[in-house]
Image (cartoon, rainbow, N blue to C red; front, side):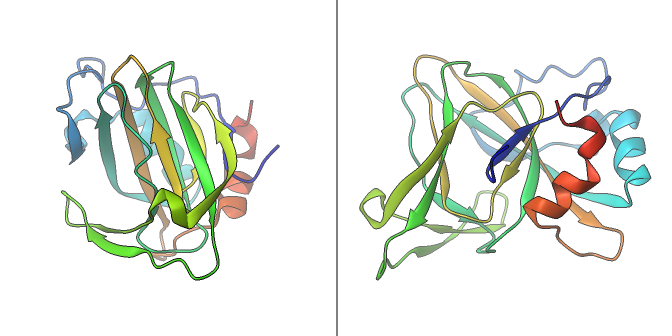
Amino acid sequence: MNNYCIDLHFEWSPFVSDYDPYSAPIGHSKLNEKYISPEFFQCIDSLGLRLLYIEIFVKEPNYGPGIHVDHGKKDMAKLNWVYGGEDSVMTWYKPKKGSLPKFNVTAINSYSVVYDESDVDLVHTQQIGLPSIVQSGVPHGIYTKEQIRYCYSAVLFTKDNIRLTFKETLNLFKEYIK
């Protein structure tokens, strides 16, 4: 087990049956809640969690790395489902001393902290499963090759509006770890 990405197994889909996960446009958007399955909501509710939203990241072939930290936080997890992009990998980095990341407002009006490749050192590379808990509070990025990659990323909070660390999220979802 590593500190960046852990694959899970659910018996249900995160989407209602008539939603096509390959239908999202290129770029960064939010999934309308009407497309999220009741089983998804039942699962997170049973774990004491609530959904803020599901972000959609659709990356074209030969994209990368787009190194960033979500919301500028230091340790937090998201629940990701990746469709297509079987030849893609997610990468995690450690900032070099003296690096100066840039603040960025995203297409969905969230924010991130962006790093140049020269300001970080690679620490881990992994293909993302269906689904996976990913560490999004350290610099990370994506490399695609020949296929379009559709990533659905659930932003979860406790019912008391607390954002969980990677380890806390693993503990909550332990019965689903492959």
